[in-house]
Length: 242
Image (cartoon, rainbow, N blue to C red):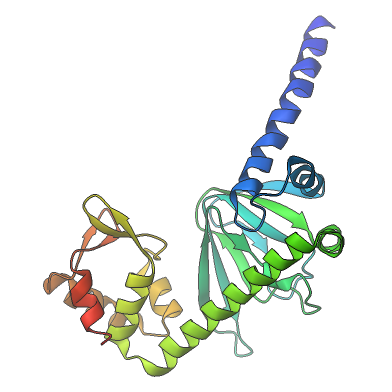
């Protein structure tokens, strides 16, 4: 009996810590930044953390969009299947980024299937309670509209990239957009390690994508270390887009 009581005591004590952890994740995102603790905790109350094993599906294309998500750990891949049953990689969503927020007001469900690329954790925020929160909170509503505008701008940029750029330009632009500065050059993060996924994202064949990557490497524009692409000559890549 004493052991059982001790276990229950530890569970009760641990619960606020878990909530605070998810609250800190929310408060760290630009959408929720500067919201006071009470408003953060009110969102936490209708949010559900979920752990995913590598290759586990979070939601399916066409499924009703009851939640949008904040990725707490790991990487989620978005895959869309067309009417001819062909699959295309749309995007990768990484730690600290929102997923499916643009479906909040949609009646068509999720526009793609979301699959964990590695062991991951997400925080699912229920759509209907969040919509009510937006109605009552002008500051949060304004930020959410800004978030959606940013999403639309990224889509426009990607459409322009695919419509007007050749293979080398597409790869160069994609690498530059996702480059993070580091001590030893610019490490390109958030780039699919699988060449077939990168090819699908850029609407290129796997062979063409591999050929461009190899060409850039021979020219000294990039290097590959432990599967990560390192930009060694950013100016050289930018010259391809001039």
